[in-house]
Image (cartoon, rainbow, N blue to C red; front, side, top):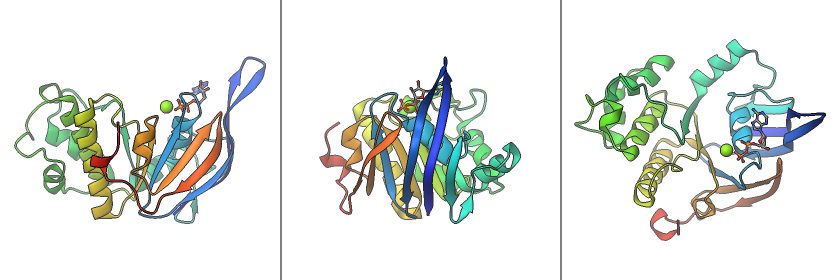
Length: 230
Ligand SMILES: Nc1ncnc2c1ncn2[C@@H]1O[C@H](COP(=O)(O)OP(=O)(O)O)[C@@H](O)[C@H]1O
Ligand SMILES: [Mg+2]
């Protein structure tokens, strides 16, 4: 369970403070698929990055399975991220000189486990283990980044616009993979998107506007990926 309470994060903005996160509270149950939606600049990425321990907040509480991560120092935050969370971004951030397999094993090595083969299979990259990132399509590169994140066996997977750089068909395929893997391994999936169609796939929809959560919708019967618009 992830419990966020009274989370505030500001940025300097001339003489004023910009409230990127303005008193945010909500919770995400284990195995939920939560989508964070809102206009550009509403604070979605800042929220994802603070919850996942990539960025520090000014104040508030961020609990992962009862453990407070607000106030941890850099070293403690790094240890927390390695043990608990995986990341997928719009850009794939693969190491260009490393093979598919080596990129994926990087994730596993960081968290000290080594079961790359099953994960390569799960994301459909069989036979492409020895290729370099530039020898793959965008969708395949994103699958490598998903596999790398999964290799850590995270309790929660944080995704910021994971299909933002992909065409519709590939984007749908990537989301299908993510949702399938999430259900099979009972991962908690937290995804930022500005595509409101994607929100209907989630079990919880968190709507943001100007640094605030303006609505939370529970969606016990999420739509099927093949039935949503794009
Ligand atoms: N490093 C930063 N320095 C200053 N302002 C920032 C920084 N990162 C984000 N912001 C501001 O915080 C607000 C929220 O940004 P962000 O979380 O990236 O929004 P979103 O992901 O919804 O587009 C925006 O007004 C943005 O300009
Ligand atoms: Mg963003």
